[in-house]
Length: 264
Image 1 (cartoon, rainbow, N blue to C red):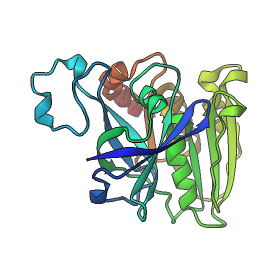
Image 2: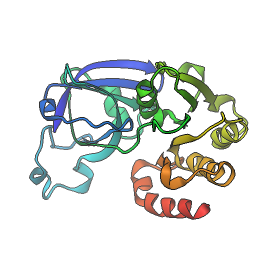
Image 3: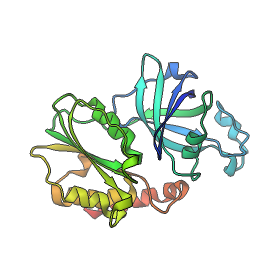
């Protein structure tokens, strides 16, 4: 499946919203998950591959020229316009996806499969805990938009500074706590420290916790050991790892998740 870039919007210095349309989106089937995602394919610079392509076209192609797979949350699906909105985190010229988003122009094409996804705020709890960094803001935003008026939510969002905060519209009774790396004594413990120091609302709650691997792991450990969260009933996963390229993280992620599961 593929689609063409319709519009590009700079949400913050580190986040770009790309709206995709046309292509084969008439075949797209949505999901109710608010962390719904697509698996996108990004041909590296110098690759002879152009979108759309068939898998057979990659036979015999050197590994360094093959499209790189990356997973991205669907920020919004407009069923009337048949358009997908994807929020990309863009930091300089590193990586494939962020670089693609920064250079994207209307008419550019993106190939992908999906959607997948598994989380949606449960209607059977009293409130919702949503936490993560820029990489999780798409799912956090979609989750907040799905909540009805009066529903309580507590959000912790890690970004570089105040100028990196983005609008998270919702009808719910949501408290959003923005955490800034730039002024933190220790950016690596910022999320854990904020969550652990907060008095939670009364009642039952569900958990969506995604972002940098070390931050997710330490915060998960606190939630499970100190707050009594059942990890089997929570959506907790690392999207990336500090000081690792995407490729290096993909190679070590399985071992990391196994070690994380043994923490508590």
